[in-house]
Length: 212
Ligand SMILES: Nc1ncnc2c1ncn2[C@@H]1O[C@H](COP(=O)(O)OP(=O)(O)OP(=O)(O)O)[C@@H](O)[C@H]1O
Ligand SMILES: [Mg+2]
Image (cartoon, rainbow, N blue to C red; front, side, top):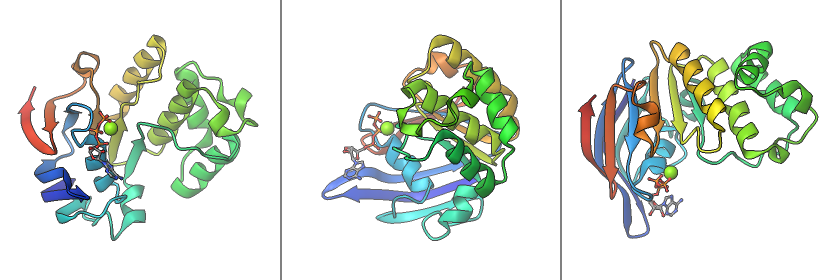
């Protein structure tokens, strides 16, 4: 599903990704770990087509992410490490997602409520005025309702309360069947019963890649 070959990404003189090669398949439930600054988010941004590789190749479901960004994004349900400062109201954002990705609005509402968020009562609020955890829950619900081929979650539970975390993993367990699922997390104990592969980055290099 994702093929990465000799990927290097340089900012200035620094190699944020240093000659990475990886193949990620439909059956993989992956945790990507590594210290702050190891290159995890840079790797994800490269997969999403937000960064052009300095050298090397990436293929996502047959697409070159940088050249076919729209097609690539259509295959991926992504929750970023930091929610973007979206200036739409909650309902406008949901309507936009429903229209652009052919998602069921009721399913978004239902998924939010499974995470204890009554999103309908916040429909008129500007998205960026929601609390950190609420934003994360809504973005998670939208990503899941999209039913994509690939899930990518960059520190998805960082802002969630304990119950929210528990519900998130329960939902993901159900929806990640037959979907390549990638978690970026510093807390392996949280995802250990969800994942079957562990990849560790250090200074932009893959230093560990094992089945678990
Ligand atoms: N747009 C950018 N411009 C310049 N340098 C960047 C850019 N994006 C990332 N970097 C650099 O690349 C390195 C890796 O950053 P990255 O965000 O990928 O780390 P990370 O593994 O996600 O860390 P964290 O655990 O803190 O989220 C850092 O040294 C960072 O400063
Ligand atoms: Mg990061």
